[in-house]
Amino acid sequence: MSKSSILFAAALALGVSSGVNAQQQQAAPPQLPQAPNMTFFVTGAGPGKGADLGGIEGADQHCQTLAARHGAGGKTWRAYLSTQAADGKPAINARDRIGNGPWQNFKGTVVATSVDDLHSANNKLSFDNSISERGFLIPGVGYAPNRHDVLTGSTADGRAFPAGEDRTCRNWTSSTQGAAMLGHIDRKGLRDDDPAKSWNSSHPSRGPDGGCSQADLRGTGGDGLLYCFASN
Image (tube, rainbow, N blue to C red):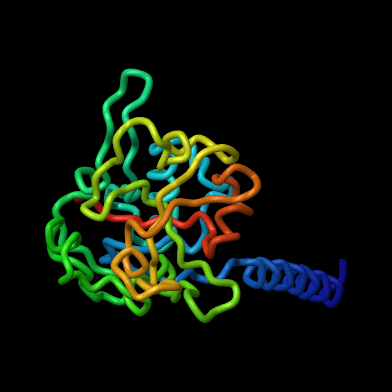
């Protein structure tokens, strides 16, 4: 092979290699915004099956997965959810499973210093501070669509409802019949009273599918979203 042929072949190989590398670089996904110090967020999206979260364990895993995407996966994440006593199992209070605090959002704003502070009028949960794992605002009253309903299954002080009347969509396993207690992420409602402004216990879900479907949750101003807290 002549010297010119060798040089041509080498140049061709280099060009092919450069083209492959360029394609690989172009195909690389963009870096997601990172917030390793984040210890609280609202899920930008729910699992997608209404209030069927795969039980409370499935909800925790959803929180963990979203946190890991944004550099905060080294912590143990818990969904702010209560369950009701059923099938011989005791109730679980949301307030008892999220750690001791303090908790800060994507931007570093401390939303509560302790469990008692979180469940007091002093907490800093609001439209501006109750943001997603990406640091995005959650559309609330005045936006279309309104997504301010968040699943909690809890009383205002963060505890489970008594067994009997369903307030947890069958302990987060139903996407049809049942009801889930909802809070308002933006702390706004149709009335000027405490339930309308409650971040964790505003009103139960309802709708033509039975109360727990994705469509029913959207019908009252929600999307199956969750509060997530780092418990350690």
